Length: 169
Image (cartoon, rainbow, N blue to C red; front, side, top):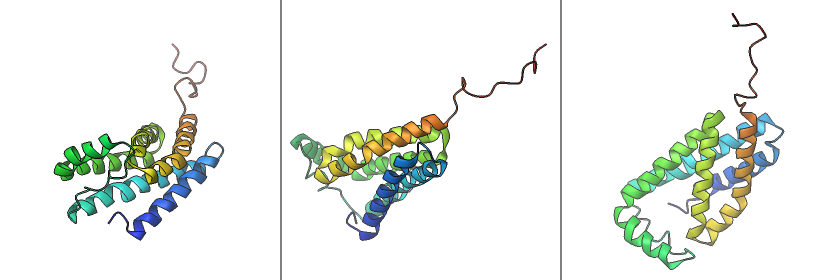
C-alpha cells in the first residue's frame, strides 16, 4: 500500500503546496492557511490514514527500515517495531493525526503541530535516501512556516491594551 499512486500523488501535491506556501507565508495570510492545510492533509491523510489502512490490510512494516543509513536502525526496527507493529504504527498514526489536526487549527496549536512535524522530520531521515531527500526538501519550508505562524500570532506584549482610563478606578 505504501507505493499506492494515489498516496504518492497526495504526498507530492502536499509537499509542493508546503514549499510554495512557505515561500509566501511571510507576506500572505492565504499562504499561511494553504501551508496549514497542506501539512494537515499530509499528516492526517497521507500519514495517519495510510497507516490505519496498512494495518487493517495486514501490513507488517518489516522492510521499511531496510534502506536505513545505519544498521542499528534496521536492527532496532526489526526487533522492536515489527513484532508489535499494530501498537507502534498505531501510535505513529495517532501522532500524525494529532500533529495534522494541530497544524490546521491555527494560532499556537499550529505552532505546536509544526514543531511536531519538524521533530518527526529530524528523525525520518535515518530511514534511507528517499526519506532524506524528503526531509531536505521540506525541513526549511517547515521552519519558515513555523516562523511565519509565530509572527502572525500576537503575543501578550503586542496585544492592544485597553483604552486609557478604561477599567481604572
